[in-house]
Amino acid sequence: MLQARSIHLVVDNRDGVALGVQPTSLSDLFVRQPVEQLSAGQALFFEGDAARHLFRVISGTIRIFKIISDGRRVITRFLHAGDIIGVSLKDVYLNSADAIGDACVQRVSRKTLEQELVRTPELGPEMFARMCDELAAQQDQMVLLSRKNAEERLCTFLRAEMRRAAANGAIGAMLELPMTRLDVADYLGLTIETVSRTLTKLANKGILSISGRHVVRIIRQAALAQLCGDDDEYAGERNMVACWARQHH
Amino acid sequence: MLQARSIHLVVDNRDGVALGVQPTSLSDLFVRQPVEQLSAGQALFFEGDAARHLFRVISGTIRIFKIISDGRRVITRFLHAGDIIGVSLKDVYLNSADAIGDACVQRVSRKTLEQELVRTPELGPEMFARMCDELAAQQDQMVLLSRKNAEERLCTFLRAEMRRAAANGAIGAMLELPMTRLDVADYLGLTIETVSRTLTKLANKGILSISGRHVVRIIRQAALAQLCGDDDEYAGERNMVACWARQHH
DNA sequence: GCGATCGTGTAACAGTTTGTAACAAACCGG
DNA sequence: CCGGTTTGTTACAAACTGTTACACGATCGC
Image 1 (cartoon, rainbow over the protein chains, first blue to last red):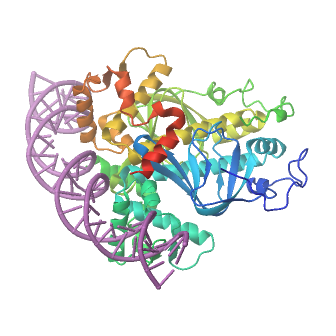
Image 2: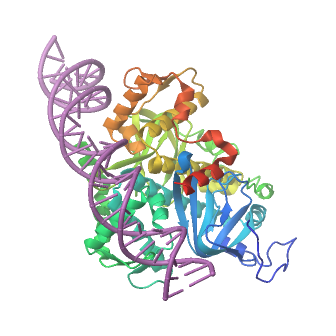
């Protein structure tokens, strides 16, 4: 398991100075690291393992998950090219990670990170920022899991995936979903059947069309956004309106 | 974890005297700050406000929440004496905060924190640690919201509150819950009626007894723990067992 | 003291989501 | 290209939770 096939050029200027140049961002820590190939379903680490490495996703999709009794699974996050895993530095991993389909990652050791954090204090704020982003994303996910219905969950998920795809240079309304329906279900706190049913419902409404197993085409973006249940439209007076609504049943 | 102690010597004797003494923990930042009294329901800040302060709870309970369309509310966290609010440093608050019942807090400005972080780099690791704890707690909450049923949610909540009370020096099986049923419901992703029903059911099972509105007495702690759905008993082989269970339906 | 309000508990009913099962479609290996 | 396996879809019944309604007790202000 977990073999580090070093395809790239190896051992440049190893010890003493972990990197030849001063890193200016966390991503720079990975630049000289070998690229490891993962096959479908291969694990990166398990919940409870000693947290010895950080990973950067080069290609493919990684799923982060927890498992509780009965084998119930909760996927807390999907990671794509460019994302970094493990900034939440506990001594053990808080959750498990494996690859959806084939993927490539790089790793750096916690030790290297800690050395570089001393050597380059500017990295500290980036760590903070990344953890804050993660906290914010998790809170949005808590809202989704706590109070949104199946349709809102799917729409929120699809919209987020659309944004990510657009940020990565994808154009048009075609959205590729590398994960299976089960993965989506475990991410959104639904069952596979509900995911399926809700997707067909959205297709029947003319909001999207389903092209095979891993591709959906978003036809009406605006409608999708409205079905997220996020009340973006009220903007400033959001809280007052909401509080008022609450107080009056 | 992540100690950047080498820098310590460099910035040791600074002139800036934001505090009389060198703080050794985040809590020390608050020691000379005035105590602010909050009456029941009073807000500390709203989601989207410029995040200018951190708060420390002296007494009472603070609830952290988000509101989405229709006035649906999600309580993401309850804070008690000693807890610090606002370590997730974005430029705006990610959520709202108000007091359950009367409460007392102290505050320090972001600016002060940032100055002290420069002056006392040991505070950095504590910030990391606190954010990691928050990330871990949020992930557990995501598991709860995603995959646990009403009974498991209540038991998990009660057990966590028991642990907190015990850590704060409370003894015995009496547990005080300062929040209302609606607060509990909004925290656990349920309705007030389901919270009520489930509590009654647990009382009928002889696991707890309800003494008025804000006090429950936990009679059978072990039974409560087993109903959490957290499968703590399998410990090491948890993941393998769970994966196996999953694969075989 | 007394009505109004709030928080809570209980019940009947409705609704959404789930579970089960059968079927269809896509994928995989030869 | 084909058959088997995996994955996805659909329909129906069941379960859990939400909804609605009402009663009770406590608190608050008058």
